Image 1 (tube, one colour):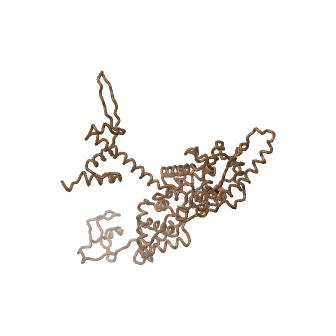
Image 2 (tube, rainbow, N blue to C red):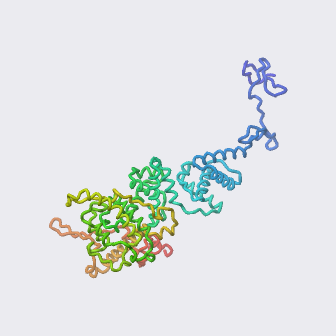
Image 3 (spheres, rainbow, N blue to C red):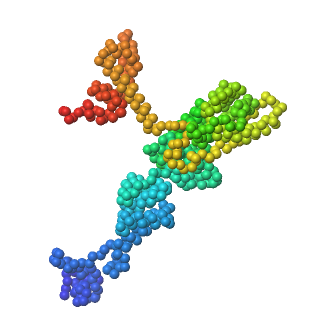
Length: 529
């Protein structure tokens, strides 16, 4: 039977259907025609049904179905992320159990699943008070930190957990162990730097420099400072990049650390000469002073000097002797030490009431023992130069003594209550509180200036006899004519304060600085329009 379509081989129209297969076959050359047996399914829902092939299967006889394939891929992804995060063994098994519990064994696929695995890993580490930076997790799973944070909140809410506070001491220890520059240093130096870092971090906690702030920039600033103390060249940019924090924030925390140490140095006899520029040079003395202060007992528990078996006048007299230049720097003189101990002259010391003296007996005992060990070296050196009596021996304390002892409890991890019970030579308030107080003072001055300007306009005669500190008046003479020009140094805040005062707003409310709320309540009251 002839067909309208020619044969693909001989191009003759001699195609006939095969009785068995139904395919079209050329009667002339016998070639079976490919894709020529399509039959349209007509009839709607009552027509013949086809075969449903599911994704992930190779036919009706396949061993693995869609669910098994999904679980296999999920386990493979979990193993890969656990390896990248460095979580192996029991911790990895704990995270897998957490994932299976939340998903009820169904797991999942898609972009959300790696984020979910990273959130479970972070929660599991946080439960055990171990360090796992959220920035590092977000970088491995390939998502934004805010997206990861939302997933962490969902995991915590689902499991009804209460995570402990962020442990900044563990973060410091992990950072100092993982930083490549510190790996090359000997273990003794690393342990020394770790104790110094813990000491400074807990001092910063006491000074409220970590309250309400991201902890990792504080860790970066402390590590850079500790590296400088131990003569290691570490740049703050490299440290910020290693800890995945902003460089500008690390610089601010580093500056705040130096400012606090400068304030502590004010208690030393040469403290007036300590500035932000030379605080790193004087830091060993300042930290040694802080360490000794932290080891002193409370004033109520101090004992008297009745049973101290040494002459305090002789000790100070030997320390302040003009023959030996004994000090921490070349500018440390006898006058500074006399001012520190609040006496007139070392040869006229009168300690009639030793219980009222400001130094504890434990501190004096420590100073005296160190003094005997260190001055012995100076005396041995001075005996070699007895022929030249006029020559003064210059002696630097940092060249012969180890300024860091590491005996303070602040060198170990303490509870928050224990940290605030320690005395490190400075009691500072939170920086936000200080800025708030300054802002209140600035607004009070602006309110006073606004009241003066209002009074000058309403009552010019009375205002002329009052203060005019906030008005800048200049006179200009040009072309023989005297022209007076008044320049008032005001800004938008002054204009808002004036407007609020004219609408009878209380000064106490203006001092708080909520200008938009006050303007809506007292000036732009749309409800009465």
